Length: 307
Image 1 (cartoon, rainbow, N blue to C red):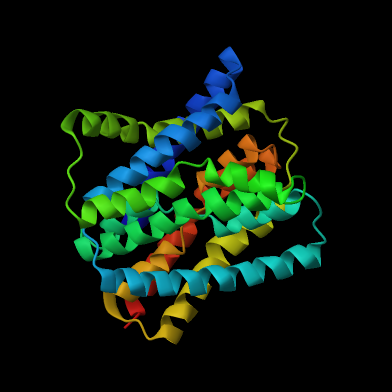
Image 2: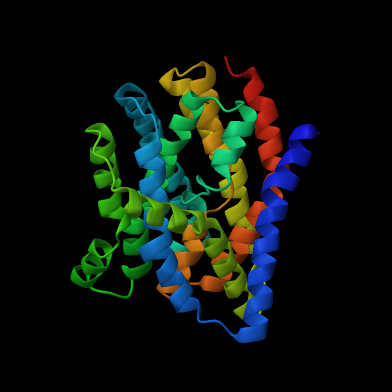
């Protein structure tokens, strides 16, 4: 029960309040969702990614193990989603929207505090989650951009869009500067810190603004499918892959927990930025965040039995 209450009070309620604020602001002032989306993609996301990677303590051995797990998990989950897409007969923009709602999960502002709660501020498990977060930032800005544009844009134009995403440059720069102990000028780092601290509030407010613009034509069946794949199938696959790869202890538990979190805000930002099923994406993020109270609590209980 303590996990349930903690997740509710420290993750879901604060997130929901910021989302609600976005809805209120949209209804009162009719904010420009495209401007907010661009701020997230080109300013706040790169800043928080740089800061977290630059300040992290990552070993190459742990990074290799986590990346092995991540890619096996990502491709296995992709295969499951593709089967569902074909069985449901999704067309056009709904295909990438469903993929993104399952494959992109909240590995930063939800998973990191959750990791630190479960593992009591363990730097080893935090480094695992930071690597997952790095990949969950890189893939939406590359594959995610490609997937939402592939059905309506030439490959050349899509590649130009991908190459304009600052996160794909920020990640290697942060890792190189951290690896070679290259200092960031103090005034610049103060600015980066200010921007990074605004990421969560801006991203959640953007989701609220998007929800405030919707007609709320509920896509209950599609949203339910997305939620089940993200919150139930995801951690089940995580359990299976950890067992298959022979991972044990806190490494295994942290990897499984990383698979159990709700749909990422990046799926909404992609949907809004490229006008690709924003209503479905917003509903998937919001509902998966709410239902994760129960599913994540169950996963936390079950990982106690992982050797």
